[in-house]
Image 1 (tube, helix red, strand yellow):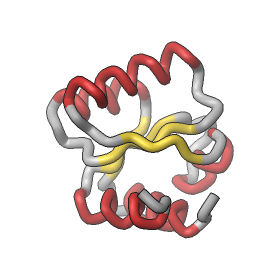
Image 2: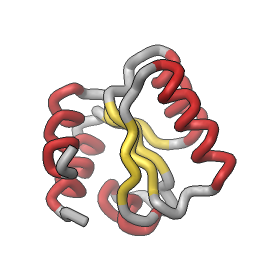
Image 3: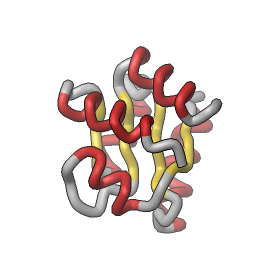
Image 4: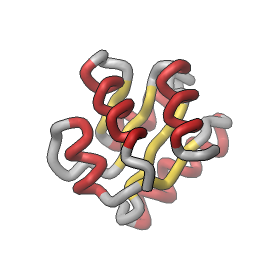
Length: 100
């Protein structure tokens, strides 16, 4: 994976332009605050289904990225399986770095 996107995720987290935690992410999707959802590739099946179904119904893009340890390390938290990017600029840059 391109590690440069992890730097942008870390910047977004420090700028308070992203949210973590399943319930918080679902609320941000429902309120259309989330611009992009990043999912760890080792996320649990139930959590993956819940978040991806919400993304599809509210037309929010989502990407599957590295494992939970790598994603958590990027934002300085432990065991993070999903991150919601709340800023359009950060979301656009991350998508371009992921090649989407």
